[in-house]
Image (cartoon, rainbow, N blue to C red; front, top):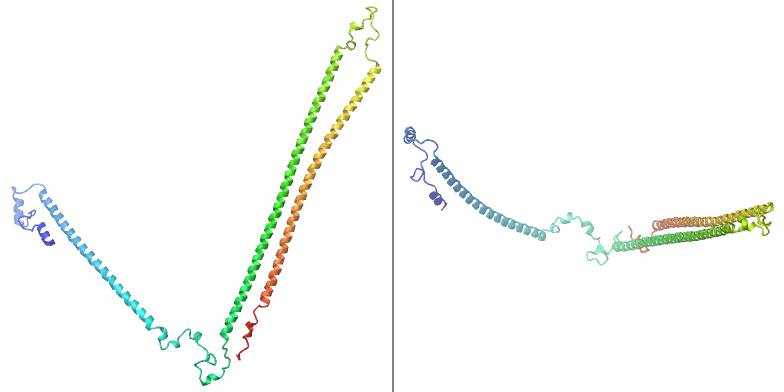
Length: 383
């Protein structure tokens, strides 16, 4: 069918339907060239188009053949793959059958020379006789072989069990010691935590007490300062009132101001009264100076009393501060003693643990703990 289609598509060379784009006869070609009437000028476009069409037809035909060849090749390849898979399956079945047959009918123990090369022959080998009731024994089985040990297996089992129990006991003791050590360490940690908490509580309480005392002292000082300030203001106001009253009396008293109207005698206008103020006498001036001296002494005494009172308050504050410092020093000393006691306890516990470990190690490796049955089997044979 493909050949028929190709024959129908492609024209036969030399037929009437085949375009004659070239002259195959040299004489006809020369005649065409030398004949000016039939010679064409320029490029033969129709001939070139015919050549392009011919090449396209040939290319399509070649592509169709290539596609048919590829389809045939793919079909053959798929068939070969299927055949190869079938062959491999058959070969695998044959190999499995061979392996199964060898495993079932051709084992190593079925060989005649297997006993000569058996790697576990010595391990599976039994003694010459297993006892007086051994079926392999004949007339010679009535005698006891020299060095035979029929209970060696049972003894080894018993010894293994005893050793296992001893190992288990040692492991349990070691775990118990570890558990006790962990518990002691935990208790020690709890004790240290409680001590630190107690120290922190004491420190906080003392700090709170110091702050409270400082606040109370500051409030008391402020109250005393306010009272002192109010007292000074009151005294100053009283002194000012007395001074104002004295100045007012001095300004209004006619005797002190020496009012001339008061000094005029009633007997005559040109005469004055003998009791009129004529200035202080020497005795009055001395009395005034003495009174002023007494006032200065009293003022110094009051100032000294104020200074003593302030010194007493300052001494009270200093004593309070020293007491707080001494209390803080006692707290630090208490903490240092607690740390030293904890360190001594830890060192003692470490020494005690070291001694216990030494004693346990000496007891463990110096003398064994195997039972008496472990040694009962030795020396029971001539060997």
